[in-house]
Length: 122
Image (cartoon, rainbow, N blue to C red):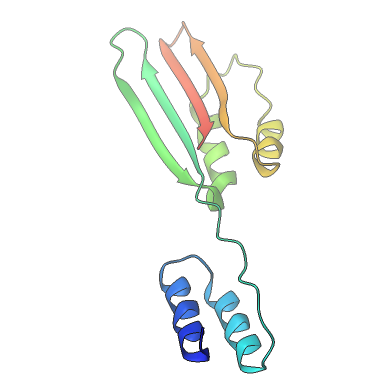
């Protein structure tokens, strides 16, 4: 691949959101200096999903998809909707997510309020 093609590839990665502008600048600088840069890994496309369903009707009351870059806000949002009687440790959930956990993290029903709360990472 020629230098011009490599520059275009880096610029395309920035445009596609695969690397940040700062990462792209470092890659372009490394390319200009003659060293062979290794592109940084692509960003994690995972989402934190929060869904609350009415037990009686089965209809979804809340369905929120939050990028992992906003995971702290997402867990706090989920905490707001999770029944107060639950024994959910939100710090434990945050640690699991930061550690790369995926799948369903919270699945509970609150009979008193008639809600089914689910939180998972995809």
